[in-house]
Length: 528
Image 1 (cartoon, rainbow, N blue to C red):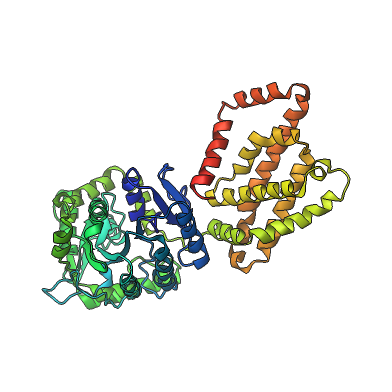
Image 2: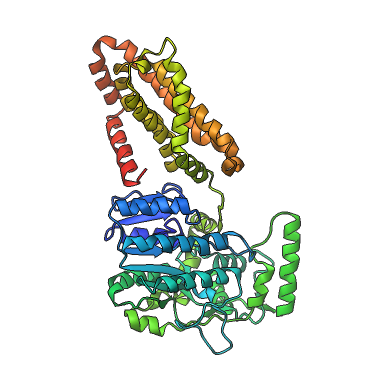
């Protein structure tokens, strides 16, 4: 599953994890997007727009037994309406990489996520259905059109289908345009009674619970699906802004408010003015000038072919008209959670320094290890480092790679205490094996210098130079502190080290061994 950290991906993971072994692919870490660790979820951080990154990810999936189904959810979308390069790099180029590489997995079915927003709004009285072309003019629509073309070509030789979503929301909302409308209508804004045009702007909504039930049925019936088939994961029809306004105000205030309809050309002028002043103060509004093209237009959906083919239909309880009272009540009763969930849905973080640093270091592992060996070679020729000098080259190489991969894993999992945890458990045994604390500290400092030196001269991570200390040096500093602590224990109890080790483990609550085992397990499960 690509896009595992997104709104749909997170909810699908939660629902499918007991029935399937899932390779969850995302740019964000599992911790960052609050996906719980589960024995059936292997989290793989990769960027689908980076061929080397996604190639490594799919190679790991092959090595671990391959997959039966591929849910391609990853996509770029934002509401600025501008020609962002990620529309092409993620939605088109990334999809082409995924299709090329997934052909080697011997899948039962490749499932591509598209959108009804990829289609042009139909003329009055007509609707879009499974046979409608992805011919929208918006930049997102054009990118999805190209993605669908790639999938149709792939489907000639491999089994694949296309899913076009309606506007997906939950009882917490989590769909940015709807959140903005509710916030305006039910707040103190001077715009709270305004509706653009006749209030007939309309799209089809679908509850996240219906999306989950859709995927369940789709997977169960995957053997019946025709390759290249298109499905609409959406409700039928479309719900207008006026209808939402009536229901929301009646639920919130106890009676319907009368909207003030703004003629289309005045609404368009207002959008341009607000955006102009927003640019001046570097705080552009969510509503943008491009949106005026869709005032009073209806993206009416007809999903009957999908319902017949799969034996699926949206639950009437989940229709947007039936859920508005639940959304409004959550907004009133739990405003802080409401705001948090919807701010997360609206936030777009294009730059991920930890992922960029991790990817850069992973690709340069051999070069960095070689530099590290060169740096430590001087120590081997110097008196005062007997522990290092007593080890054979293959043993030292293994240890160097271990230290480097601990740094990598700490960046990858955003666990800055990982190296400290390692030496909390293994520090005494390293000292008993002949290493001195000075040697171990010198090795870690040398590794830090080599890594930082490499990053300083790599142009791909220069925008994140101010984060090198946080992601590389801090975990090493914590590790050095633990080495010095373990050396103190080692020296104080030299004659009775075994009992001292047991005492230290018990004093820490007996969790250290478990912590190390969990760390090793996570490294295996997450293919670190």
